[in-house]
Amino acid sequence: MLKRIYDILFAFKEYVLLAILLTLSIGLIASNDRTQIRAIRSVTVGVLGGAQNAIGIVPNYFNLRSENRILREQNLTLSEEVNRLREARLENIRLRRLLGLRDTTSTRYIAARVIGKSLQLLRNTITISVGERDGIRPLMPVVTERGLAGKIVATSAGYSVAQVLFHRDMRVSGKVQRSRADGIVAWEGGSMLVLRNIAKTLDVQAGDLVITSEYSSLYPAGIRIGTVSLARQVPGSLFQVVELVPAVDFATLEEVFVIPVVPDSTRLALEASFQR
Image 1 (cartoon, one colour):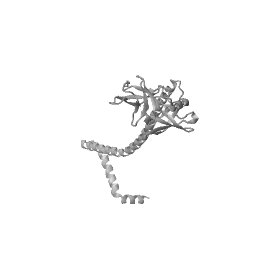
Image 2 (tube, rainbow, N blue to C red; image 1 turned 90 degrees about the vertical axis):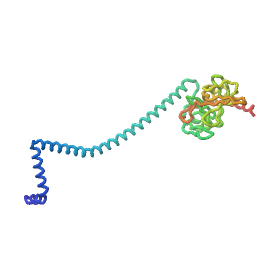
Image 3 (tube, one colour; image 1 turned 180 degrees about the horizontal axis):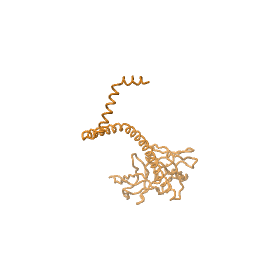
Image 4 (tube, rainbow, N blue to C red; image 1 turned 135 degrees about the vertical axis):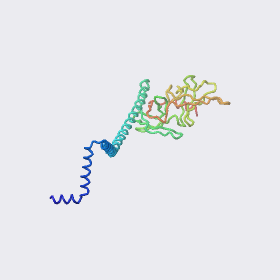
């Protein structure tokens, strides 16, 4: 056993001698209190401390990367939660407005969600989440808390399609609320409605509110349609050019009400007989 130890020490004699000399040197330096030795000890301690800090950065770097990844995941989760809460808040505001409209009038309404839109054509429509089993019939008016949206044109058991005011076939009897001037609201393309058949002698000004008139056979009177943005005289014409900003923003439309009334068929037949 001793011979094996001796053989190992002899084989690594240079390293053993180096270790002994280093140990003696460190011991002599530690036990010597001369000024030069103290200076050497201070420098050595500083170098060793710096090296230790540099080596310690490596595990800290990996720890920081792991913590940073966890924080990013938590931030993403919180952002998604904030977005869900914001969407719920906006939906709550819209529904409160709709409920406020329902609660401030004796008219009965059927609430519906907009589940489809076609707003890129001349015949713009929306699809809503109620149908015949909910009592929906063609020609029933569609409104929001802001005003008139359109009318029902097709129904199935659970769904309905409504023409919106941005439809080239839509015509609504409108009235300027302030001056009581009557005309026909239509859409000729673009983002505005027009109020036709307004004589140049009638008082119409920008900012006037236009509502449905009592002359309409389809829509109850007094529903907001839009606000006059332009009223301009045309030389040589008997009528003014009147443009309206619609009360309803169809691009952001999400909830509507259907008014479950249909026009009087006898009135429609009588009026149609005089238009032949």
